[in-house]
Length: 246
Image (cartoon, rainbow, N blue to C red; front, side, top):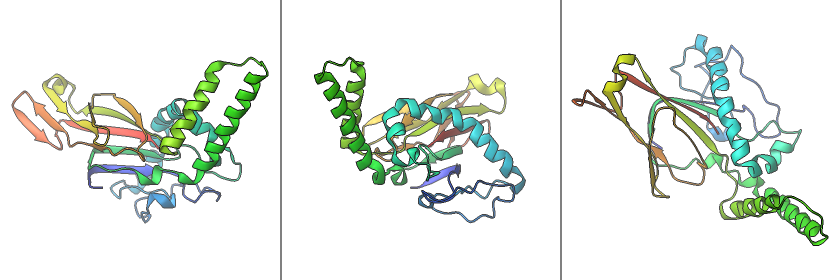
């Protein structure tokens, strides 16, 4: 995947089932980067060492509330994910945070977000839930019908697609001079080529998707100032900040 701009991740530092070492103030830009599949913290080396404790706190503060949405929208995933319900594992649903500045990328899928290892157990649990609900139904025991419909729908979702950690993204265009805001037009899109969808990114826009299942990309922005000056990629008057959880 090709990308431009700054991008930082924060996530578990050790594998599933192993104790989680939390970041401390001694860690910073000199820490060697590693692939996300190894579940370690990594970030761009542009972050100053002295800023690292503040950066960790800021990322958790901003991204924590955004990540909570996934627990409700994809309730069947959050409740049935095998490692989330194990006291022996620190691995959680949506365990990582991401923050970017003036970010754009080429089309890709986040293959590390697709957690095939837990899909069979989640499917087995849903089969058992549906079986129990049908047994109650046959015996005339009353229960909320919507629960059965939700279980069947959740099962179909996992059978069709498998299990993937959802990604939540929030966007904000920060203007260095508030007076320039009405004079600047921004054109930047979030695209899912495989689905054939394109969405114009707007200020404070939020979206959630299964990034390991669908190809996607964020286009390079176009900034038009006073209907005369055009900036492609970056603009001296605007910074695009995006953050989310995955």
